[in-house]
Length: 63
Length: 465
Image (cartoon, rainbow over all chains, first blue to last red; front, side):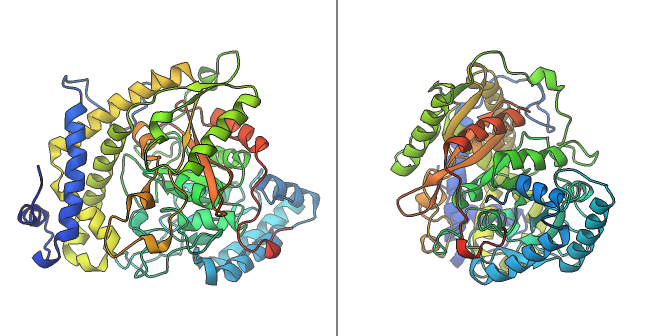
C-alpha cells in the first residue's frame, strides 16, 4: 500500500508536526520507505506469541 | 613507528614522553588539521593540560593508573563532558554546558586517559553530511572529497589522521564501524549491554551502543576493558557472564563467511575481494573457513530501521513539533516519517528482533566462532553524492552493519588495505555474545596478515614520533 501526501500530513499532525503541504514530498517518500520495511516485518514476524520480550537486552538468554 | 596506545604507553613509562607533551602535541594537531578535516568541534585545552600535569606528577611519584595513563582521546559530541556544551552538531540542542562527565568519560578519566576534544558527528548521530549545521561535516582524511562515514565521523577521522590514538563513538546502525571502515581504522561495537550509555545523548534506546575507534584491535580491548560494566543508571547495561562460560571449544578457530549478508548487486568488486582476502588470510593463519548463512539481511535491516526511527521520533517529537526547521534537512526528513509506524508494527519489530537474535546465537554462531562479512558494501561515497533531500543514491548508504545492532552481538570493523582509488577497505567480524575479547583476538590475526595502514592525512606531518 502506498501512502499519499494527505495521509502522511494527517499522521504527522497527530504527532504535533505541522508541515507545508507543498514541502511534503520528501516526507512522503520517507514514509513509504518505512512502510516497505513494515511490510517485511509483518510478513515474517512469528505468528505465535512468545514469552514477553525484555527491553533490557536481546541477549539475556546467552551464557 | 606505530603511534598506538600500546606504543605511547611504552614511551611514557620509559620517560621518552610526558603526558603534558602528548596533550600539547595532540592539541596542536587538532588545530593543524581542522581547517581541512573539520573533525574537531571543540578542544578542552585547560582541562586537558591540567590533568596531564597531574598525571605526570603521579607517574613521577610511582603511581601508575594503567595502560591509558596519560593517553589523550576525544569523544563524539553526543557524550557529556563537564563544562562543555553537548551540541549533537545541531541548532536545536540547548546551549547549557554539561554539569558532569558521562559514565564512559568518567571511567576513562579514572584510568588516566585525558579527554582533549569533542568531535564531529552527524546531527543527533543520524542526519547526514549536512553543510547547514553549526559546523561543517568532517572530511575523509584519505580523500577530502569523500565522506568519512556516518555518524561518528570526527572519531574516525582523528584516529586515522593520527591526531588522536583513540576516540569514542556511538553505533546505532553502524556509526562506529562505518567511520572506521571509511577511514581505515578499527571500530568496535561491543555486545549490547556491555558499555553503559549514561550521559550520552540517545538516538535509539534499544539499539545504541558505545564503542571505541582505535588503530589496532589490541588498543580497542584496552579501551573496552576500562569502559565495560553496568553503572546502575543505564537499564540496558548488564554484567558479562563468568569468563569461563565464554571459553571456546578446543580445536581450530571456525570462521563462517556470511555471503548472504554482503553479496548483493550493489556491492563493489573491491569490497568482495577484501572479504575473500580476509578469509584466505584467516585460513592461512590456521582457521577453518567455510560458508555460513546468517539470518536474512532484509529482515534484520527492516527490523532495525523500524525500531531506530520509532525510538528517534519518540526522543525528538516535541522539538520537531516546536521548531522543525531548526533541524537539519537530512535529520528531519529521516525522523519525521516515522510518524507512520504504528504501535503494533513497532511491537512486531521488537518481537522479530528476539527471533533474529536467537536464530543467530543458536545457528551460525554455534557452528562457527566468528562470522566474516563486509563492513560497508561500497567504498566511502563522495560529498557530491548527497543531494538536497534524503535519501541519497543507494550506493552512498550501502552499509552492512545494522544487523548486529538488532541482534546485539559484538562486531568489529578491521581495515584490510586500500582500493584502486586509495580509499580504505574494511571487513567486519562478528562474535558470540559477550565474546568481545575473542573477537578482537581474531581481528589481531587479520592485522598481522595485513600491512599496517599508514597515517591517512599528510603523513609527513604526522604529529606523533
